Every structure is written in structure tokens, then in C-alpha cells.
Amino acid sequence: MPEVLSAPLVVEFPFTRSLGPVQSAFLTGLRERTVLGVRTSDGRTLVPPVEYDPATAEELHDLVEVAATGTVTTWAWNPSPRRGQPLARPFAWVLVRLDGADTALLHALDAPGPDTVRTGMRVRVRWAEERAGAITDIACFEPYESEAAGQPGPHSGEFADPVTGIVAPARLDYTHSPGRAQTGYIEALADRRTVGERCPSCRKVYVPPRGACPTCGVATDERVEVGPAGTVTTYCIVNIKASHTANLGIEVPYVYAHIALDGADLALHGRIGGIPYDQVRMGLRVEPVWSGGGRHPDHYRPTGEPDADYDTYKELI
Image 1: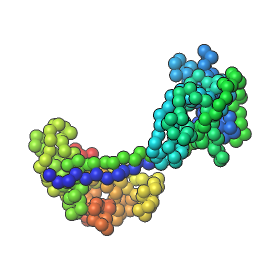
Image 2: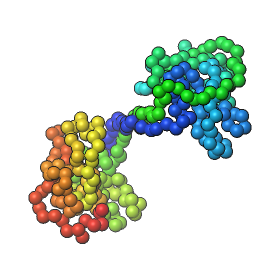
Image 3: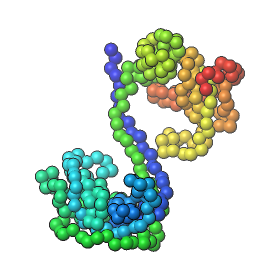
Image 4: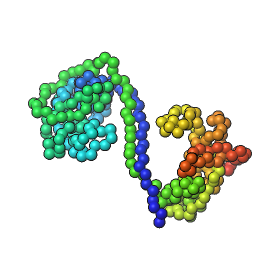
């Protein structure tokens, strides 16, 4: 049996969102070394604050200021910090109930080792030297022996130059194994061939292969070479430049299409090149242009053949 491939993959994108009045006040307060919570109708103080009571769904807006000291309610030791985490050295993840709050805030605790951390220990906020209105304005918590502070006091939530939006980077690192079927597909691409698998029941050819027919639910193992030419079944014009396309020298606008390769019963994705974007159309006949290393098609270009008749690809749209 051939060796199954695996490779590290990263999914990463910036998530941009606007802030309502409660979250705006909370993050702006952190920039000003002030921790705000929100009070519910039954007198509880929630930190971090939320805009709606999680128990009653009542809208919340009464902001209060709580202390920058608190008590650890539970914790877990992190011996191997990862990229983007609060500290580069081993630390504890802790839930801290700040003095004056009724809920706990998750953050990092800078401690020399797990034997120095315990539930019930007293801690305080260590503020970041440079603050911009984000949860990272709290650099971490640190041990601090003190008595609990008093009750929270009301706060208007008003600050100069309030934070109204944030960009939160989202990133997922993982190792992907394509399995037997897709390993064969990828290895065939290295030889500039496109290979699918035929279902033994319905006889459809799936490209890329999945190892099983999604319609019949039976395993597939009969390999079928398809293409190399195919037909554009549908497409979209991309007008937003992404980092990965910019790195490849792809300028917007460009066209991304579903392409039904000859002999396949499933359309795959591919970029269309060699033709002005506004001349791409359904039924356009295209062929692959391989990347320099030959590992995959860089894009598809027109073959010069007449357009395919709609009836020949309408089931693949």
C-alpha cells in the first residue's frame, strides 16, 4: 500500500468586528487601566461584561468598575506556550474572579511553576506597557497578597477616543492527512495527470476522489484518469486581494471557476487565466497550465474550442 501523505497546514484570517457600547467601554477601559463589568437586574456583576444577561436575555447597560485584584477559582498549567499566547515561557491558565465581580475572567498567570499555583490564591493584573484597547492590554496576572477590595462602583463608561472596532486574528495550525484516495490524486498531479475514482454502484467519477461515493455510501477504488481539458460550469469574479494571491503575483480582478473535467461527474475549483475576466463564461472550454514545479495546475486557460452545449454540463452546476 502506498505511503499516505501528510503535511502541516495553517488556516489564518483577520476577523474584523464593530463593538457595541458595553464592549467598547470594556476595551477602552483596559487601555486606561480600568476594568469594567456590567450589573444585572438581580445585582450580579459580570466580568467580562456582556450586552445581554445570559440567564434572562435582558439587555444590560449598567457599567461598574471592579478592582484589578482578584482570586483564582481554577487553573491549568501550560508547559509549552504556543505562538501568540500571552507569555513565551511556561505559565498557568487561570480563571480569576476580580474583586467586586461574580464571574471569572480567563487569562494567563505568570508563575515560576505549577507548585506555586493554587485555587484561592490572590493575584493582580499586570498591565501591558503599551495598550491599544484589547484584552492583551492585560499582559497577564501575577501573584499578589492582599485583602479583597470593596464593592464595585458605578462607571459612566465614557472615555476619550473610545475603541469602536477590533481586528482579531484567527489561526488554526494542524497536520492534514489526505488519506488513500486523495494521496493518489496528489501523486498523479505530480505527473501532470488528473485522476478520480469511479463508484462501483452509480458509476459516477469523482474528482478529487473521496474514497467513497457521497451518493451511494460505498467505497471507491477504481481509478479513472480524466481531462485534461474541461468546461467552466459556473464562476465568480474576485475583486478583493488576499495575501496568498498577492504573494503569487495574482492581481484582482480574477476569475475563480467550477470546472468539469472531461470524464468527471463532479466539478473542481480552478482559477481562469489567459483571457480577460469579463470574457469568462459558462460553457467555456479550458485546459490546465501547470505550475513551474509541475505539482498542480497554476490556472486554466481557454482551449480555443467552441463552447460546450449547456445540456452537457447542466447537471454539474
